[in-house]
Length: 132
Image (cartoon, rainbow, N blue to C red; front, side, top):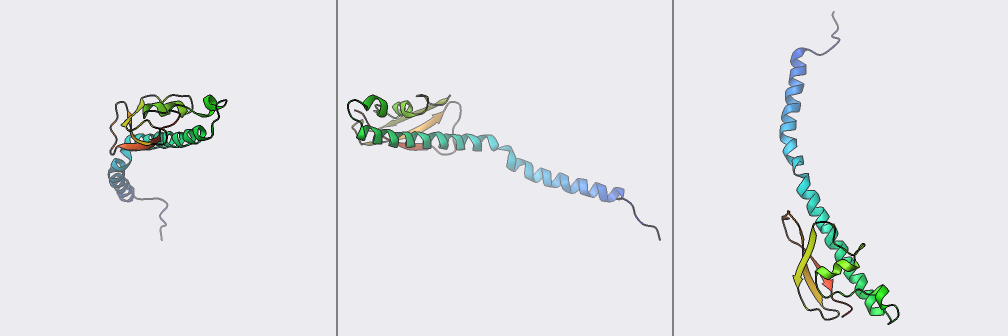
């Protein structure tokens, strides 16, 4: 009896066909990583801004006249919360807009945007007015 030492040509072709079908089905699911990454980055920046706002408001609440400049940044609009972020600026291409009262302790709802990109859903975050 003869023992088989490899695969036949038919078996190899069938494996290649099956891999081709799997690739044709799977590739479209992984192509759209860029928009998912941008959505996640926008949510991260919005979370950082909301956190910076809460920390800044807390710093303003406990600041004394001598320590006020170091612990308290004036936040009177959605865009001005960038002063409380590391570096004092929005990351490149980002901006925030919204409406609300600039009275200390009031909450403004802000919408984050990235130049040249429209997210699937609007990315919003809350900013607490402080230092006014």
